[in-house]
Image 1 (cartoon, helix red, strand yellow):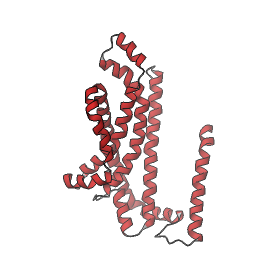
Image 2 (cartoon, rainbow, N blue to C red; image 1 turned 90 degrees about the vertical axis):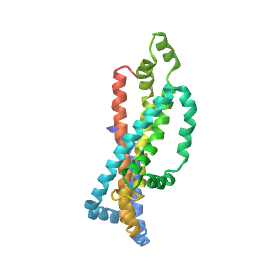
Image 3 (cartoon, rainbow, N blue to C red; image 1 turned 120 degrees about the vertical axis):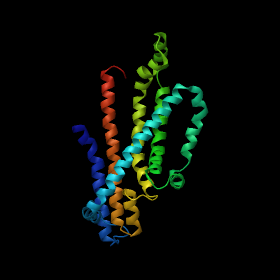
Image 4 (cartoon, helix red, strand yellow; image 1 turned 30 degrees about the vertical axis):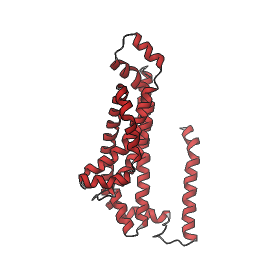
Length: 254
């Protein structure tokens, strides 16, 4: 706890200083609220619109969680498949890299044309955003397993399946969690982007309506909530990482 306090007060102080400067600047230079609202205006707007915003918040959280679970599941499955089948990896790994060169914001309208305005195109967008970080991180983790340990287990008569689940997968957990943390932050951003395309609920819809009516305070409320939501997801993955890696170390696996 003492270490957290000593290390955490500097960024907290920087954030508070930034908010104070922001507040003072908007008052001193009499900046219009529609152009750049003061932090107090944003807080006031959040209090007035929280009942309406909560509906959109819950919709985005549900969409993010489902898309994140699908994305990491597909990413892990593809990473395991490419690792276990070297010839398949040599054939399809370049396509995995090329898939990330297509901007999601460009692909999104096509998904709406192909699959309509329901939940499916939105889930596909989130899945594509979460898929790549976890797939590449996991695949890299599998390949970084000590060759000496692999050779030792083969000498002991371990099968390919035993080699993977007893050695390669546990040793890849730190890399997997690195990919999970990236995917967790991407998932919220992707959910909001997907909601810009024609959804009826969600933070993205809330932001679109606020922007079209020049209610900038509402836009900032949505932005701040998205940031907090991303940090929350990231923190949950970090906590899960500590618990899982601690359990594996106690079990002597990692």
